[in-house]
Length: 279
Ligand SMILES: [Zn+2]
Image (tube, rainbow, N blue to C red):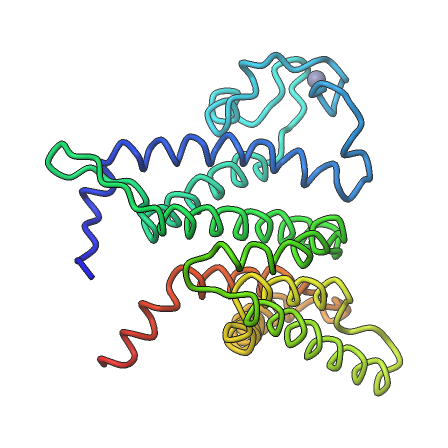
């Protein structure tokens, strides 16, 4: 395993190509995030200003740059455009570049193009998996739901995807779905019996089943552990920050933490394991 060369990777034209594509897809993900929870995904309409309804010219839809250029305001009527839009675009672009750096399927060395087909499969698996989790997380943060139209196809496609992945296999994917879904379903059921209310949503159950399917059963417990740690740290911090407001009932969706843990595990799990062993 060669040392990771950050400067060379930053200068690589492939990195910037992946960044640009990530930003473009991030722009599409914004549409998904807005439309899927509202049930209007298939409604054909051009992008319209939410303030005045005027059609938005395509040169005002350039990812990240348009928002900066327009300073977060619609050109037609000055309606504020949420910073969420450029953040999702930038986040997707950066995420895709990190996935490419983890699985550099094509690289240039001394003028030669080096192509690695196993890394291409890992890269394709990574961008689909991480992008779906990113969309689910933003929707979960905003609406406290994880849409079935995202989680169920994710579960259904997992065994097929696992067959093409260089490391995964059908068996670990199927066990991952059952284990991921099963553990959370049991927790949700016990919580409901004890508290007579839903603590853990079924959306989280399906999301973890999907994660188990796409990463294999080996990843399920680690994902839950890291997500719980992360969720506790953020939750306790928020309680400490907002201590003065006593009536505030803290409602923190778990989906984003599960997603973050799963993405981190996919991209840095091996490096982390190697590091812990050599340490
Ligand atoms: Zn407008």
